[in-house]
Image (cartoon, rainbow, N blue to C red; front, side, top):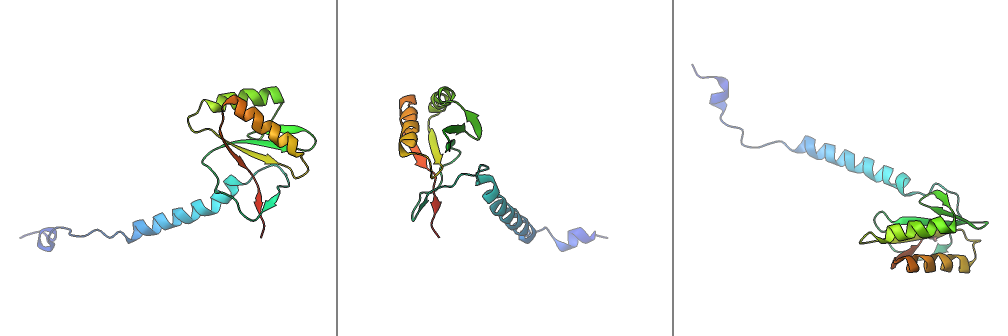
Length: 133
């Protein structure tokens, strides 16, 4: 007597519905948590613009706070330490620096950080702003 498996024949198709369900749930979880990962942890009042570019992948972040405080990727640094970090970041092939400055910071201070980055060899910059809604 033949077994029931041999009478039914080989499996011709695979049900992919459970796999699609799992992938969609993971996608929703990633989209919800991505907003928390990207958010800055320091309370800096960013200037608002009507347009802005999309964020670049994993850039180095320089934050200028009032009064005259600098941060490199959320860590407080002096200007000399910032220059060292910028030179180290410039060694990467696609080095990008995002500059976040409080609205009350002088324009000259922002341009000074841009100048330090250019002297270190970084050519790609982005200024962090909030979009006007």
